[in-house]
Amino acid sequence: MRIRVVNPNTTSSMTAAIGTAAAAVAGPGTIVEAVTPSMGPASIESHYEEALAVPGLLEQIAIGEQQGVDAYVVACFGDPGLDAAREAASGPVIGIAEAGFHAAALLGRRFGVVTTLGRTVGRAHELAERYGFASLVTEIRACEVPVLRLEDPTSDARALVIEECRAVIAGGADAVVLGCAGMADFCAEVSRAIGAPAVDGVAAATVLAESLVRLGLTTGKHGEYAAPPAKPMSGLLAGFERQPAADATVGADA
Ligand code: 2AL
Image 1: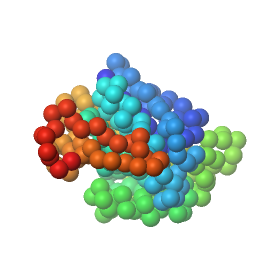
Image 2 (image 1 turned 45 degrees about the horizontal axis):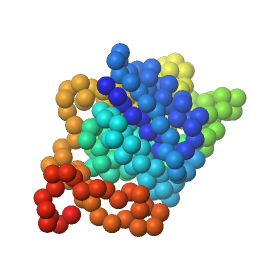
Image 3 (image 1 turned 30 degrees about the horizontal axis):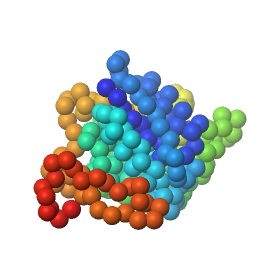
Image 4 (image 1 turned 90 degrees about the horizontal axis):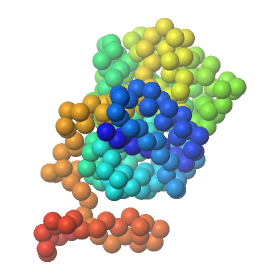
């Protein structure tokens, strides 16, 4: 089985750390390929960057489809482009916020989230609402560490994440979800430090994607998530034009 873990930002050192976290939990026989888009922001911590990360993500889904990938992980906590990726992919696509929330909901009655900058808290609340977990979320806290500072083990980043995770647990949560793919490589350290479960969405999404493939399940493609129709795309997006499906009905409005 091949699982393509797409880091929607263009920082390849972060992709490598994400790939290591995903490979560490994948079962025998599963090939994890962590990939970096050819275009997009170096890190994603605003709505603007999230929007501009989506073409690069979809480029990596298109390549995966050509190569017969079985499932995908969108490895950014805003789950950018998740619906579009589900339309474009034939196999299941899981976002790391989505996976983190699902896993945390199985670990106790309520959970909290620790994200990077305060400006990403709103998006995390929006996703908890969307996925049906809002009533289980105790709080969403920001450690005010920019994404790329998480990569520097000599910085204060890890200590600040741990401090906020402790506060989440002290506030009554049974578990804490780490709100950035850049926290994947020190999730175990956080768990040990706070004495409570810390959930890394990259690992959770990898195992969930693998499980869906093993169950023979994929996205329902008969309605909302059907493959997008072929139509002209212009300017910088010309390369994103989709080809008509081989079995498309001639004359269909597509
Ligand atoms: C993220 C993430 O997971 N990757 C990225 O570039 N930004 N999330 C976040 N909350 O800042």
